Amino acid sequence: MVRTRGNISRCGSNDAPESSRHSAARKRPTASARRRGQHEANVVEDDIVENEVPDVPREDEQVIDNDGGGFPASGLSPLCDILYEYIDLGLVLGFVERWHPETNSFHLPIGEMTITLDDVSSLLHLSISGNFCSIENLEYEDSVQILTTLLGVDRAMACVELNQSRGAQVRLSWLRDLYHSCCENELWEFAARAYLLHLVGCTIFANKSATYVRTHYLDLFRDLSTCRTYGWGVAALVHLYEQLGDASFANTKQLAGYLPLLQAWIYEHFPTLGRKQVRDTYVETEPRALRYVTGRAISAIADVRVQLDGLTYDGMIWNPYVAHRAARQLVTHSMFSGFLRVGTVVQRHLPERVLRQFGFIQPIPRPPSSVPMMDFEAIDDRWKKHEQFVVHQVVQAPAPFSCSDGYLQWFRRVSHPYILRGAEADRPSLVLVPRLRRNLPDDITVQRTSPSSSSSGLLGLVKRIVGGLQRMIDCRDVTEGTVAWDRTHELLQMAQDGLEEEETRGGRRVRGRRPSTSG
Image (cartoon, rainbow, N blue to C red; front, side, top):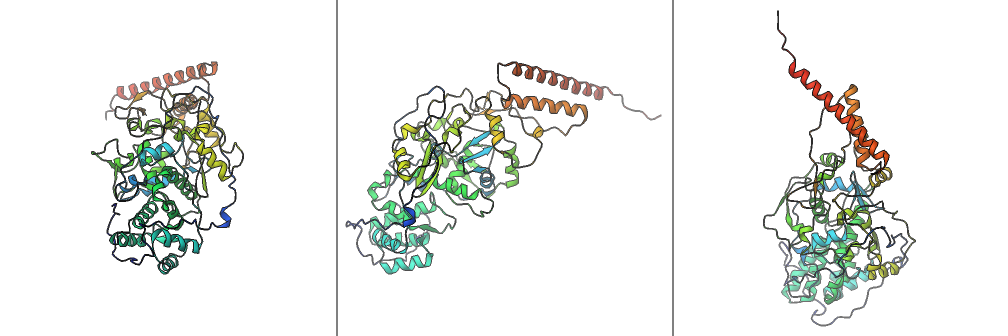
């Protein structure tokens, strides 16, 4: 039998109306009328990029059979081991303020990045295929019915808990007590549902209260034998997208969602950020989120802002899961472009905006609002036929940071990737140096130079010209093979030669100067 973490109280209900070992009536609770409408939103069509198509595996991702315990496998077992004792709030908030809900991506100086279905699959080892979690908000009487039917409590106890929780929700502590009581009375199905509801309430469906979980999630465990058919990784991503979008507004004071997922994603793609340790005992058959151990120390958000504003290609790992592919392959569901949903919550998943995270060249993507509105039925139908709506006709990237001509120029025109104020000439240059890190085979590093003191006069002007010409090349403001490209390179070389000669001449004057003597 799977046991919950920590101490479990001995108090709880022992007067269950029926044993869960007998089949219970499976009447679906009445839905709230306001949840039956259509969801109007935009999706991205399937013909997204116009280039050569590589082979992408089409089989479903590997299943995980290690669920343990005395109830049917739920597909949620990896969550039992992923526990970050401390969340680095400064690091997390530094990314939250760069989140754009319209694209569901972080806007950074090097372009867009986001948490994708592939990230969820690799970090958490949750399924990213299967059915959407279809849930509907419950009214008071519906919540009473689902608690008595699926958790085995009597009506009085259910009403007391709902009244104390002030809504269609229950306390996590109440679920722990109930789980212990059900185990003592060998009501294993009731115990399993209490455990699983507590598990998702602490992890993938965590809310701002950190104390309660909504009762409608319990309906996902009505039939324990079918729990595994849900795409739990999809649900985790949709819920996190929703919470990031909410937190990106200035008037929002709290952030919910499964923050270890976000924090582990940052650790994987930005190895120089955050204060963490890597487990020496980690093996690639485990979820990637288990690689890291977090401490009490947190990052200062002011420092994170400076680091992200100064981000260049050498601070990135675009595709960190190369060594992990034996455990979690890149499957077609990862490249699905369209809408994902949990109940009435619908979010865009747009991998065509972050193709470098999959090892492909990043082109200029189409607007996220480029297709007509859809209802829930159409969204579900597209997911079932996901192979028709994957990003295809992509090109393998010769280098992890590869993007099409004009991409960075376009991105910096339509977005605002910097948080701190500063002159454009003082921004770091995205110098492309093809040298690989030995321990990170899919990463590109750049030789760092120490920041020079501010220059003035003619020498400072020449330095700014060199920086401007270099950015024109880095951002593809000029097209390779054209006359403008050749002239820009010639001017850059002339300016660099003149700058080097001037600095060398100045150094000779200093070194050759005779010391003054007093007469």
